[in-house]
Image 1 (tube, rainbow, N blue to C red):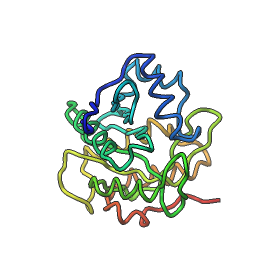
Image 2: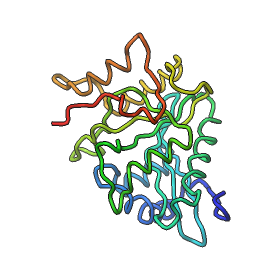
Image 3: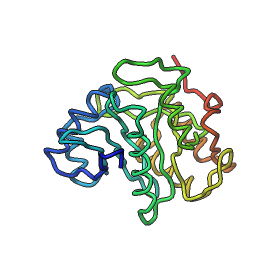
Length: 235
């Protein structure tokens, strides 16, 4: 619950359309959001798991997760500007983590966020520094892994130098630490499913896969240490 506002799954087409228009579309740039039709199709088919907080017929915020093997990736989390700082975002994350970690076979919950040292605040899309502080309060860690968000569609660019963070895992040991075998498998499955096979001359993806496949293991850092995460080419 967020105060008196319940958090519930959303699976109905018209309700998903309303949620997209009220919560997702105003809070994400086009390079980070699928089309309305793709969102509704994904949610009604079960590819996206959508949880939303609502009050008196309007949506206050939503979290959307997507399963990849034994892990979940939070594709989108957004809260109405007027409701930020009131606990809605924390409640949505808690609801998503509880729901997905209770799913048999799930070991890890991940999310993507911007680096505050490379991204400025935006009046519509929020403040990366405040977002990082939000996840830090929730106990998230960050993978010491260079990362980009793959293109949302054929006409979109890669969104480079995001942070791939870990919201929750079955292993309660805090960072810094190495990921366990099951956790590593969850990250690798998500990367290969979203980035696809390594293409000739694709040095960025090669760097990411090299870290993910390193026999020495993938390192999970405290989120405060995010500047240790390697950068991809800024040019």
